Image 1 (tube, rainbow, N blue to C red):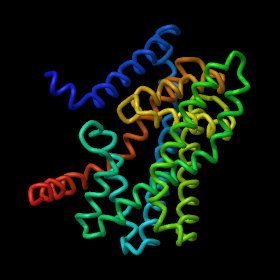
Image 2 (cartoon, one colour; image 1 turned 120 degrees about the vertical axis):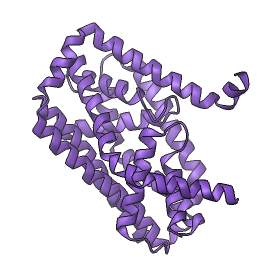
Image 3 (cartoon, rainbow, N blue to C red; image 1 turned 90 degrees about the vertical axis):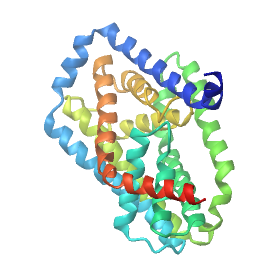
Length: 301
């Protein structure tokens, strides 16, 4: 048992982090009353929920386009449909297999199964992540400015600065060398950045629509800022796939900046997670063949 804990201490620590964050979220909800959460959930318009689902599917397509542009600009002749297939498969594995295998590893395994160059695909995944983070960094002031304007927010400011900016700096330092292929391909980088901005805009629109679904009018750009802050908080490796931490941080921001009640904020946070899970389900169709191919390579190796 001790040996297992030592070998899996990071997974255990992240699991405990997720549990702690979810417990804190439940405590926050209980302070207002459990019935208020169910009341807020019942208020959500099914029509707005459906539109939000479609909007998030479009954002996933933009994310696939970002990776597709990077691969094509590096000489990998992958069809767009296959890039979309692998993107959805990676999203599915991140949501349902977070403790055993990452979404990027599934995308890499799928690309190798299809016969594409391993080194370029691996580098493209790193750059794909980095460009996604760069796009979010562009929207960071939309969240930091209203956050810093809160009264008695010095602790929040110091924690956000220490956690967010340190994470961005460390990630950039570790992965800068991955740009070696694409530094000579400015059009590819520019196209990938435009795709990630499209991805972000549709994610923001999804949350904006959920807010409209419970009859709350919040500025689109404030929604963008709040989600961006949540994104960077979940990059800190203290939970499994941001589970619990994403919901808790989004709930806090919606209360403090959006003017929502605890139950309304928790409703939006939980529905956001549900929508991300639902839009990853198409990847379940392709995952078995990719995992089988990856296991086959391990046996051969």
